[in-house]
Image (cartoon, rainbow, N blue to C red):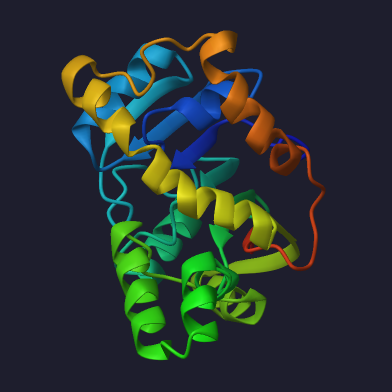
Length: 233
């Protein structure tokens, strides 16, 4: 994402709590849009956007052709009315504007560790039930491969310029188990609004040791997520 040229003004669709934008981009993005109040207030405190809007992605309160580029990080897999959201993004972009986004691909479901173990034990039904639950738990509604996204983008008025898979099956399994090992962090989040009470090196050394190899890994065709760069026609 950092390697994409993003002319201003830049729109972030699904800005969330602003963490991604705050650590990824060297300058504040022009506008962040998200439908949820609590994360938007958190994003305001991070200073990663010049303006934040509460809005549904299918009904953006923005003028046609008013943005020169757009980004979206791991958001479109969660949205309802995906075709309408893509059409709205296309509407507010000027012709030729780049749209860079990331989403999980079908490997996000097929490469989970627990279903693989269950199938080896002949428990295919339980494996499918776990996959269904994991999709609901992670609020994942849209899982398409490259050809599926190409069709969706073209229908909305984009041309797909390139795609790159990343986030290996091993990294996905770390993420999968991270949901369970990270569950105790829910308590300080509810009580104090912070996931980690002591964000220090000594407190996080084991986590850093375990995940750094996945953070540093190169993109690979076996990846369970995909980066897309499209261009508004």
